[in-house]
Length: 366
Image (cartoon, rainbow, N blue to C red; front, top):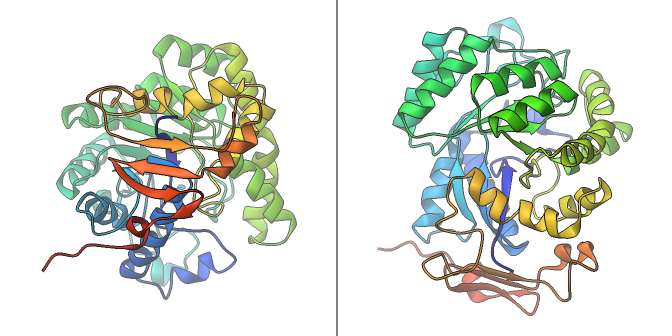
């Protein structure tokens, strides 16, 4: 088929038991170097483009530039740079720290508490070279605060982010689990709702009226639910993982039946990079036809990026991105996990199931 696009990745992180402690002894450079490994794994899994929806220090912008320059093999990256959220919210980089270490992160760090802050944070993203904006208008699972779903941005703050984003040519992706947070994000004009766990009928109706995309990330819910049972996370996080995890698949199925537009996205980094295609299996389990699941990762994901002219289907004038699997995934969707050929922009990175020389070399010019 043509290229596959993952609309929800975090190439600069991979969650493990040590993640919470790592923040105290790893530097942005460490995360950036790790991200080159994750980028290669993602490309070899057949994903030739990704929307990287948030990091802590703009490492994904540097990674994007390195991939574009041919220095590192990886997918084409559209980076949201740093997350944007509110004090104590899901994007707060010092959540869970003691007072001496908390500081007071502000708009330059992606933390806003007013419409004016929102404008400054978006302008900082423009200055930093981001491609899009990612906001956190609800609680989340893996942060150390108490709620996975409470609203964490006012409607005015969301509207300010969207207005600023439009001035600077950005789309806006909104992480939102709770029904009220989803409602505000849709009314505020965001382009996509990510996760959408506790989405209700009113939210779905509004999303259809506003043309809002839904990126379910079912695999993230399934993965954190499993790991919470294995004792991976602090108690507060484990509790939230067990609340959210089991619900995402059902919500995705309901949204599909209701006619909400769905784009493929996984939350890669919450589960191990390279396993992205498991999402196709879960989408079909949720009730989507295999063809729809594949379209969600091609034409739909390209439309969400507003880049249908460049990729998402095979035709003259588009990037020469081709991904193949050994058989017909419409008969067996699990074949999407066995990508054996990957071409990106005319360069073959995987042939007969094995990485080529191009996948291993990096070209830093003298």
